[in-house]
Image (cartoon, rainbow, N blue to C red):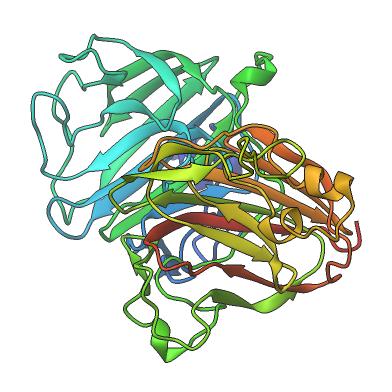
Length: 444
């Protein structure tokens, strides 16, 4: 009997039988967020160059100094997947969702919603298994009320693997709602998140952490209002690596006095250098400078003079300066264009910080100049809290914004140099600085 002929199998089906089929992920709309070779598509927001790097196809953070790596672009609605692994027990890191481009005042971290990446630390208030919570002024509503009423969702069950093992996160972010799946199961959620559009970030928080297989799928937009969108990048560059004084004067007398402590530049007011102010190596022309600062000494009650809106001191009937008692913790400032005369002052006087002492007290200056460099109002935070300066120098005009209040507006500084170094002033008092960023305006 003749053999029954075998049915013909289409070549495509035959190949499918003998060759592995493509993974479903190839058709799920996800795209790579990290290429495994370099940090293309990412921006080191405020860390040292060596804080985030690529090794053996992994995205690695040393955790020091604390800070974050962000995406180049903002995202609104999306699904992100990633794998992470702590190297040592009790390691700490995080994934920021809808973050601002720059850190919050005095903080190494941005306003955002954080997806916790933590190992081996569990209490009734937080866990190492996928907490979701708001940081630095962001807001949200947890799916389940927190024991202490915090804006933090604790996971419904513990699913994270310990240090040394890989964990998988799948985070769906849509219209202000976040759902987190840990190793294959949704355990945490938030709603009413604000912002709900912004950058995606990886956090450095003191310990080494590895990341791989970062993928993202963007979802249709839902028209967030302006107040629901994170602050966009504006070209600011950090002026410190937050580990040492690279890029600034390296006088041996500064050692042990101008120094970084946990990413904060701490000055004890006692530099032994001949030039005790801390100067940049580079000169700057037109720029916008962002600088956070606070007093670290214990305040004492001190009498300080009252300054009038025209820049003169208020006098009593005998011609003596009028004084009021204030809490005083020190004096410092920021020199611009290479001169102590063009100093944006930091102090505890009643007039408030931001004035330009060298111009205000120069009686040879026109009245409008002296009035222009006198703060319109005192906008300082209470002693011990962080203040944020936004200082703009363009041509011979100075604008100073202190804690969101414009205290100096387009003040003229006659004779100021067109270019010069920037300095943090020594005045013999302890002071701390954080988040010193600059955006150069030359050519704009």
